[in-house]
Length: 364
Image (cartoon, rainbow, N blue to C red; front, side, top):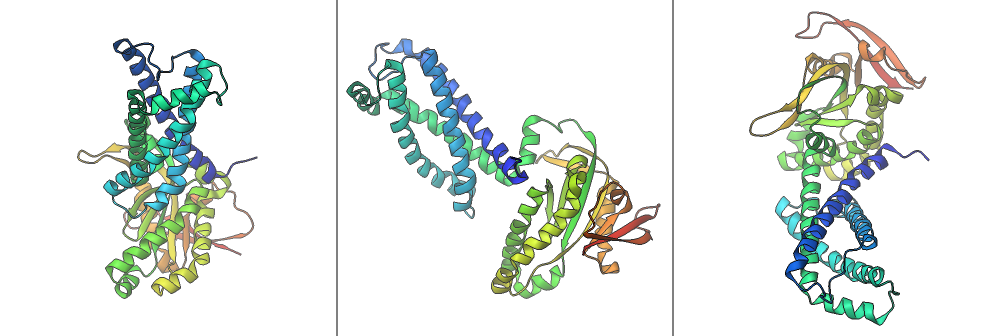
């Protein structure tokens, strides 16, 4: 069964949580094993580290980390969506403390059962568990979990603010040294934004933009796009060449976003009294990609293709078109018959010496 892009993205987002818990688990196992010489090796609360126990513990903490990731992505993010960074840390930590206590109540008896090779229902297991709950070993375990949770919450919050793809690129150092790439860009602009802003006022207009960008996100994810920048009421979406050309994702994304907004038109009408719509320009070309900035690091694209795409988008009003695409991109796409492609001839874009042929695209 082929997984959807959104499902693959969610799996990729959850895996780091499992890795964080696994690595922190190994660190604490190492520390506790090294420290056992300071305490009585016959402590009634310590589970001796054997290979079966180590393997079980590694699997257990990884599963716990993956579960934390699932809870974080599908529950915590939505629950605390409008909270500040500090509030998210406090609220999430409180809930996770309860989860940690539950995890301890499940995993310790299982580990004790593995160690002694006796059934988990045996009285010896639960007597040991009782002593463990009031011991320094329990405090040590809670500290391990607290550190793992803190790292996970920090990772999740930073990933949410930077974007999962950008954070991954930073961590892997993909663009630490500048590289040249062939990329597709879409500049997408909200129609009549000035009029809408004047009608709603600054606060309500900002609330509309939040809903608007949120509603566009599923189509971007499902068509393998990446958000490069939000610039006021404009969003810049990018694809690497393979993902953008595949199944004409860069074109289908535009119409999928329109469909999603159309499905939510009633909501916008009721809440804001306006139904947002947009126009876009799409182009392809080489860019230099790399990390840039002294006070604040960003993944930065530079190249003529960005200026040209912005100019193409700016021509939409002149041609009364919602979507304009360059000939360079059209020539590399295999479009289905449902798309009506019309040549608008060669156009002189501001700042370019060479004319560019543009096409409008509609769905029949």
